[in-house]
Length: 276
Image 1 (cartoon, rainbow, N blue to C red):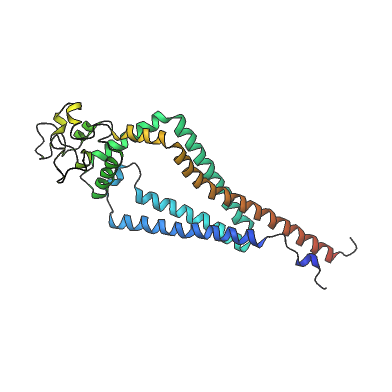
Image 2: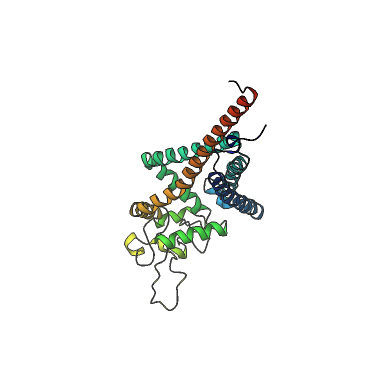
């Protein structure tokens, strides 16, 4: 029987199909990079003091990478093979993740006090392990320099660290001190005094303010968040848009494939029963 125009016609748009494929391919490559970085970090630094940050960053990268790999694999193969089952899996998981992020954002805003308490606990744990890991040390130093702050709530939080502890029993040469990243650095100084934080925990708040940043980093971070809400909103939107694009494209392709299946079934029925 000769082929008719209806046999050659397809509801599936090549533009939608391959756009979804290349869209997923990009994030599939990103997922592989995240997994590689996570595995490398775990191998090089098997036991790390960064584990005090509630979640090990290397483990988090691996989990996010594996999840992204699975989702984008479903999207790539599903779009290329026009497989409804894989495309529905891709669409459903992406929708669930998007909704979970939305709920997490709302809960974080509603229960901001509890979230702040968790952050405070995490910062205090990081302070205790400051000298245990060079990466953690660099991370804390960067934060203190960036926000011009010292400690979690105040500069006295550094007494929680065994090296900076201000008790008389502490034999450390850094007793009652704070890290150099707490210090007030003047651009006019030709020689930087790296010992500027030595013994400042013995000083009163106003007196210590002449040498170091006395305000805690948590309050500074909260103030930064309040003053950069538009920037954070833009970042959240940038993260949400690719997810919404993936959901919309996959749903469009699913509908097109379903219409194509209906057309094929219709043509097959009329071939077998020309009188119907």
